[in-house]
Image (cartoon, one colour):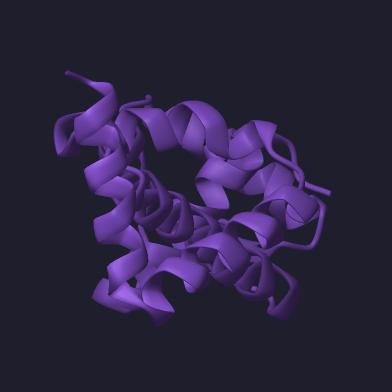
Length: 139
């Protein structure tokens, strides 16, 4: 299982490849706000652990294992954003809150949160009832 730091890199690489068709060390460094040398070290580690195939001076691609993990990490991130939005967290706090909690939840917890998000999405009156309750308790 990848470490939280490895997860951040895999998720970012997955998203870059998905949107641009490729991911360069400089792109990853810019997105994660780290030095390119740190990215290179992590890319080498991810290659060693079979999350990507890296060839010096030629670039890298995610392996099937890396793609699968990347998909799951993006799902987790988006799910937590949806969850926080549904429960009424202010939009300006959502991204930082997700970044703060996503590595600290088990996949079992993520699956239960997915159940709850689906519960609210199936019937929008449920979310409206939650908002009413929040308005009553905040007064």
